[in-house]
Image 1 (cartoon, rainbow over the protein chains, first blue to last red):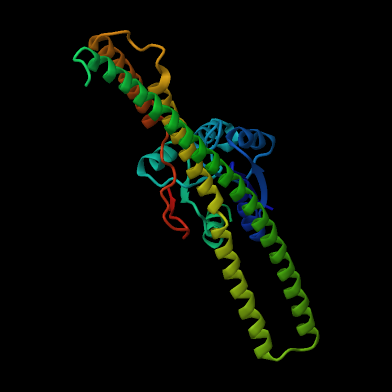
Image 2: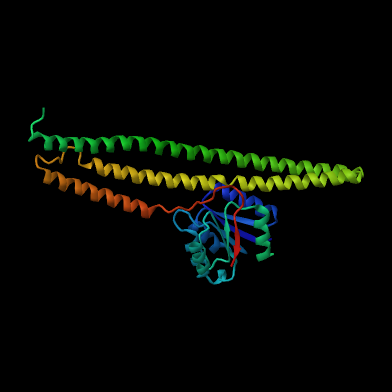
Length: 120
Length: 186
């Protein structure tokens, strides 16, 4: 089973992500912020990372940069899932190493289609 | 009738009373708004937890019901229209579940907006605080020049607080509806 790391400081958002991805057959590891996400990514290499941008402490962009600096995360797909949709912040995400940008709120069918496209 | 000499003194006193009044009342009202916003955030947080829990429970029950119906129909060789009806219902439920998952993400956005409002309120309270800092304690004993210096000082501090506030609180939520957002793969 492919495993996805879902990083978001909102409990309800994590719950909806987990529900949608598990229903599509994926395993889900939840993290409450960037630092927690980084620690969990170190404990187990996951198949895909979905991260929010604005979180207390380490934000999404910093998490992506930290993950891309790790050897085992250089080619793992990372998607940003955030309320933000400005071109500037998207460009920063792309430069940091994100593979895609999803604007909240997400539709579970569209989300799982994107995930399937990236990791099968 | 006021004497000519007493007018500047009275103006100074009135200016200080005005600043102090604006500061005190402004701060009181903002504190009330801040308290209400924080309470609203707590209530929304609790509401979303209950909604999510109920949603999960309903979804689980419907899944079990559908499995039961399916096995009952397969055991009894259902008419094709019954099987088709069951399949249509399953698809309809799937669509409603998807829409509910999208809708249930509202709290993530409202919470960010409330947090931003609270930060702005705290900033405004700082501004009001600067207006009231002098109160009457530092009121110049006499002379319009001292009064001008003091008002300039207050004005500078208010300006500095306003600049801090403008730079510190970035808008992160621009959504105006709860339809699903755009997806872009790089």
